[in-house]
Image (cartoon, rainbow, N blue to C red):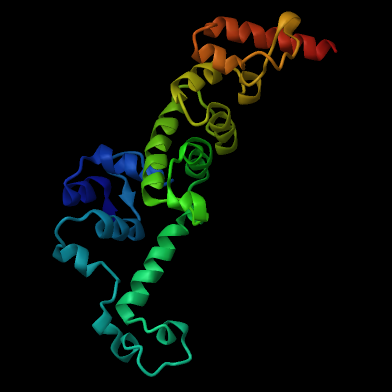
Length: 239
């Protein structure tokens, strides 16, 4: 098993960059001495290695077209759709890889998917993928993974460790300002409570902005936000 500092040296990264990348992919590593599973090492070499080296090649299980022998030649297999369409082996491989990249959303970390759905997709401009429903683009996934790192850091400052609870905060905030969400969560508020719209007497007032929005816009401070929720809790219990 390759350690974090070893793959960092190989890619020309710092150990922290490797750790942040693995966290964004949903894999927990504690330090530069942590081991990285072989399958992740291979994937990182394929995606990020600038110059192939002997170690990477020796540990890479990919096959070149010539290693497939006769299977690499599509001529004669007329019962296959790709042959009927006149695709070469390389063209078929390229098509399958493209389709695989577009379907990666099904294998994304739940928090990354939530960030895509609530922070990135709603702000799409003229993205052709948005129109055809083909999934998330590679750039969108990259941005969501970067945001995931910020939300993971927020968990050290008060945000819940449970992914489901974290996703509720992402929905409330549209994936923005994890630092402010961490402040309120660290003060004991849930995402549902930070989403309350309260008016006079701690009664629900749909015309009011949410507690989180008012806190974000500096209309109230953290103490005032907590006090409003406590008053609402007492009223809710009394009723």
